[in-house]
Image 1 (tube, rainbow, N blue to C red):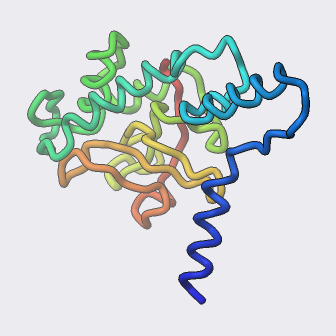
Image 2 (cartoon, rainbow, N blue to C red):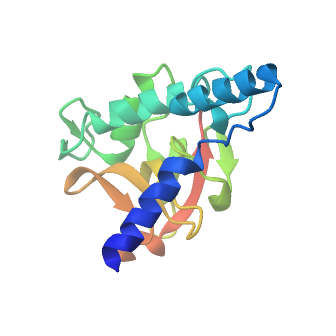
Length: 186
């Protein structure tokens, strides 16, 4: 029974993107349908826009995340701003500086840069801010949003923690009650 279900799902997936070609005398319509089938392989059907410019608006965000991930595992050092060791704001300022965006050196000062972003509007590349045990209710930590789960509202972020540069989730116990806000600087 399990194999039958797998076979049925596989057949549905294989035939889902293939429109049935009607047997009629309209060769122009058949040619258009055939061209649509050929474009399925490159996912143009997802965008339905002839003027679509391949990932143009996401390129800077991808570059920021590529730069951030290139430092994954780098050591934490208070007061350091890379390239081999970072504190949290040193990490974000270093990453964005390599993209041509100057951020202030402290997380508190970075919280005043760019535009405020509501939690439900977070995007990859946004800066997210948290309190820390030493900061009280004030800003004490910053990271860069990697991705957002639209269903739960949680997000993953890359940051320089005391264990080094790593990715954490906003639902982790340490961060869930310390979230303060977000800023968009690009």
